[in-house]
Length: 294
Length: 294
Image (cartoon, rainbow over all chains, first blue to last red; front, side, top):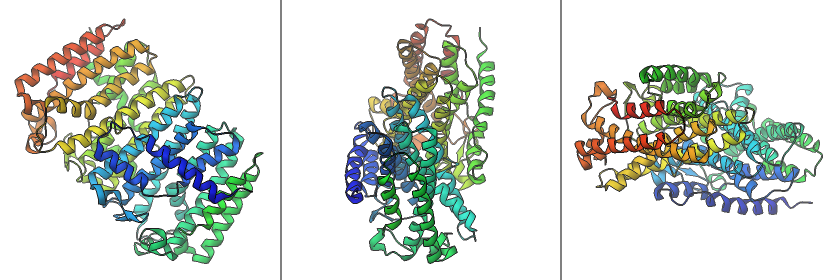
């Protein structure tokens, strides 16, 4: 039986070291400071851990896989920096500390986000420079760019902006959630599978796992936003309701929303159990994702 | 003898079609409109044309090379959108038309820039999906991400922001110009060379060509900013002097600055002539870049 808390702690430490190691030294100081600040401002490192967990399920991993997994966190961190900007969500607090633009100003926050997004693809390119990795890197670059781009995360952000103050259907909420959060979580899992040399059929099962647990994760996020306290979450709560953002709990009620999250979790477990490997880590990770309190 | 104006016109038309073709249809409308608006707002398409010219010098080109060349324009256009934002240069006019944020708002302009940057790397990944292109795509992705990122274009933008109102040396100006403009121009040329299968030695000569003509191009840009009229340039002139930005003409005087541009041009021609191919197009392109009036 794997100790999932210990697993998460170990991976988090490995990733935290690798995240900063890949920031080049010769970059201008103010910029790298702003990037480092946002990378170090906490965070669960869920996406790179999903990459490592998926990869480890299928084969052994090495330092190159750890470096690659950082690309997911660079993209996630860039998206938070840009989302927090005054022109976007105008958030001053994130993970319990002032947001990037509050510390370094709007211009530097925009550039730090741009630089992290670019660094993600530089990381993939460098991974591809390793012997025998070129085709994998191209496939990973395809997954990542599609998940992060206009038909993925950025597209979801646009729909979310446009949805403020409007009444949405469950289908519309699902679409926004799938693009905004689900696409990158799925890419995290699939990129791990690709790095480990998974077959098309195995990637398909990883995809079903990631899709279901991704949506469940978003529902839990919405529930925490309704029910949690600022202290637990490290950011103001009730913000979504205040802005009349469409969320699962707002539409279904908290009990039904929680039920839906559990149903999706069950589906993710079923999919991953079909893999012919020891899938305990991926299962425990999924459980952790829906049991979280912050 | 090649007719360079006709060559530029033909390539520009080919690129203009390919640029829009690669915008996915299923993306949210407001976002793709903002992206399309900035892509269609004119522009010389210098970077993708440099990619095609370098590639054509070494071997035949096909549609895949044209699609790849668009990645350079996506990155250039994203950098203009973000640079024009109120938090950055706060420019309301670019290429004779209102800037992206003036038409679509700051939030959408930030997202459109993010989406174009991501699309650039998606374009490279899709290029790598073509038979036999994986290693080339990884090398191109490496060049592009390093040129666009914190040690390249974004790093230059940071130094430029920090330099406002300060006295700089010629060396400092050169460093900013190299990062802000030169890095991506060089990548444009080198990526064309890589796509065409250039050897390391050939890539080295293309690099010297691009470095020298890139700096010359920036000097001419500064001279036009001093001397041009708003009508010719499609953007307000004298803006750099007004903000006390450090430029070559401000430091050397216009005559010396022009002399330096010509010296750099001569060096670029010398380097490219060392290639064992017909280099007339690259030579004429360099000439065009320093003779331009806008």
